[in-house]
Amino acid sequence: MPNRSEERVVTPGLLRDWPLPDLEGDKESRGRVLVIGGARRTPGAVLLAGVAALRAGAGKLQIAVAAESAVALSIAVPEAKVVGVAAAGEPPDEVLEMAGSADVILLGPGLDDIDHTMRLMRSVLEAAGPETGVVLDAYALGALSKDSTLLRQRRAVLTPNVVEAGHLLGREPGDDLAGASRELAQRYRAVVSLYGHIAAPDGGCWREENGDAGLGTSGSGDVRSGIVAGLLGRGADPAQAACWAAYAHAMSGRRLAPRFGRVGFLARELVDEVAYTIAMV
Image (cartoon, rainbow, N blue to C red; front, side, top):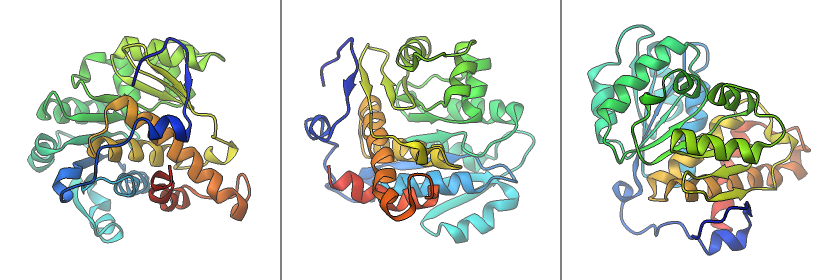
């Protein structure tokens, strides 16, 4: 996909000309995704992100979540291996071993303590290989804003909202979200997906225009980051995963609007539309 200095609109035609990797082979060939997050009060965030990754086509799912929620989450998501993480101290060796063998690591959904998040990130990303795909969301972005050296992987996607983008920039992003996404992509040498504006560190820029008000619902961002992780697991490159995910996320909301109204659907309902939306491109 050629790079352009101006944003290219993400359309079905653009995506068809940028096809996702073939789905030949077994679940191992579609990638092992590790989702790390879910504090004691917010375990649902990793459920949404993890199931979204599977709906996007990831082959295997592993979850590291607050120890209090691990058993319940393993029942809620029987497709996943679930490991508990204590709220203090270093992550257990099992999580570091999972990180070392993961194809993609998604960090941040549902975390609520910046110091704990920084410890997790430092240990987990050091255990991962340099080519491991990484998606950072929520508190993981706050941690990155405090220490940019935490991110060492080359295949990385950042999925900030406007507040998180402000922390990463060190200032309010203002109305020029396209410019903010480009600046962040250059600063952190990662693909950035910011409210439909996608930017790559090599200068590529895209814009997804189907997003509507209903996407501004609790858990929606967790779904979007999970889609990115699942597509990376399938073998998509970071910019491709971010563009396809932005389209799938937005169009899943469009598909739900006739049944629930523009603002009546839930994030969990977005998840169930992802696979069909991707398949119909």
